[in-house]
Image (cartoon, rainbow, N blue to C red):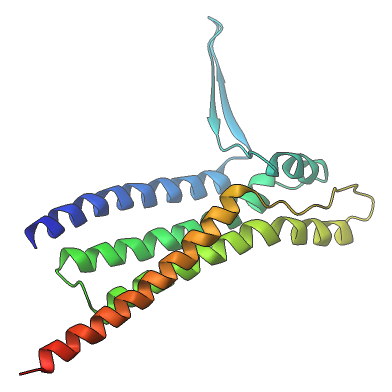
Length: 185
């Protein structure tokens, strides 16, 4: 049990650091336009900011053309489910740290993480095309490319989400077996 406490503490510290970095990312999205660029006389150039990558790059450029912030419209909705997952995992590992293993709270946390991962994938896949349709309706003059992008990361995360949900179900069965064995004389 002592080993579980130490491992849980290590994971908790990593999760808290991750949550803090996510909160800083969200604050950055709201506080800066796109980036902070620092240039020096000696030719040094430093850049700090959040950059859209992959299939969101083209969509971000199109959103910027109509005068909106691509980071606020594209990066933030992706950060919210990830932050929710992180908060639930912090709760789960706090329970592990307190030596709660086969308990209802743990099963609920694991189940919530699974469904949050599935929700994150659905948001990552469905949100950009829905946003483009809405922006096209609001700005008929804008020429925004409509597309749905599903990559191997989305498929992997979707499968991982359902695997986590199955693990929660297995934990629930383990809890009921534990409860039965405690009642047996």
